[in-house]
Length: 334
Image 1 (cartoon, rainbow, N blue to C red):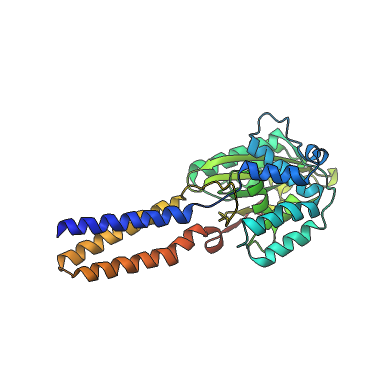
Image 2 (tube, rainbow, N blue to C red):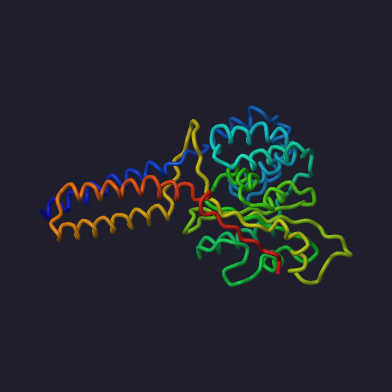
């Protein structure tokens, strides 16, 4: 009897792990896909104009790509919508709420020849500090782990003669995914991230992508612009408050749907946790049933019900975490 108990538990564990692995194998764009799409629809001159970070040696290739794709959206919004956005909706991110798809395309149709954002190392240092802080502590939002506000933190690096704004993202580590995720801005009624990326006021930006102990990756984008003399304040927080309407944090992860050249996304920490919890639950239930000498069909029924619950309820929940359990953190520069 005890051998049957361990055998049933082992079989259930294998099935559960298989479901978890298959559900969490999220197809994503590879670099080959994004560069092919880029080179097919954008001229070398357009790419060169948008690629303002190409000589910034302190940035990683992915951080440079964030700046490249943000600038492409600012350079020619209609083309960006017709290429990257529509391709994402068709092949990858079709589960995004329809109204956000349509509003993004509509907003990008109005964007043309905005100034190209230039990387600034001071903003990069501010973004890196916050991204590393969030990554190590597991927090997510605009305030630092020590309680320092977004405005004060950026002000330490950026100074008081300039305005600033911030966008935070998590789970992604490629430039196009981060840019599109912020632009879609699903379930953010103010569309603060989208507005920040296509705000004509901004002149500079700093980008940092860092590992996150809970969400795998986090990205911080800090924007900056020159504030007119008569609007300048002696305090860092006031300087930030002048533009903090876009200082919203996006905490959603994303499930892609289909597409060639896919890259498997590793399991999220929550997926690992849920698998362990379910294994412990089934071991406990099997032990209780064994103590009461339950019939084999009772064991089989319980296992089937647990598998059905896991597959139809919990798998969609953690794979589509960005849709089912999204959080929004607002920093008002205070």
